[in-house]
Figure 1 (cartoon, rainbow, N blue to C red):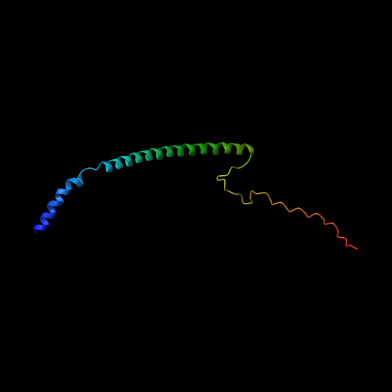
Figure 2: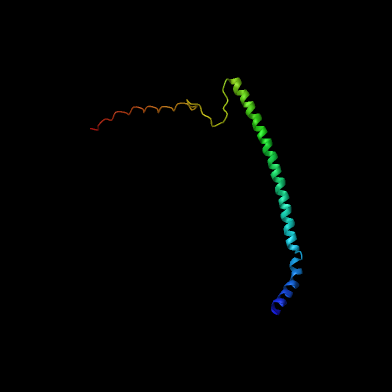
Length: 107
């Protein structure tokens, strides 16, 4: 029992050292907090840019729709949309082979 009490006293003596703030740890915490703030700002900037680009895309789509309407073309909802008959032109037929010159047997 006395051994246990002595060990406890030694542990209590070490507690203030363990609880004292470590400057290196504080520096790392500070650097991590700065990085978090930087990343939050970057995310916010990217969200704003994304919103701006989406608005720009919508404006372009509207303008393209107006151009298509003036040309009498039905605008597509998606660039990947295809009509049932297909939009691609019929494949070209291969050119006929030129006639081969008649072979004359050598005499």
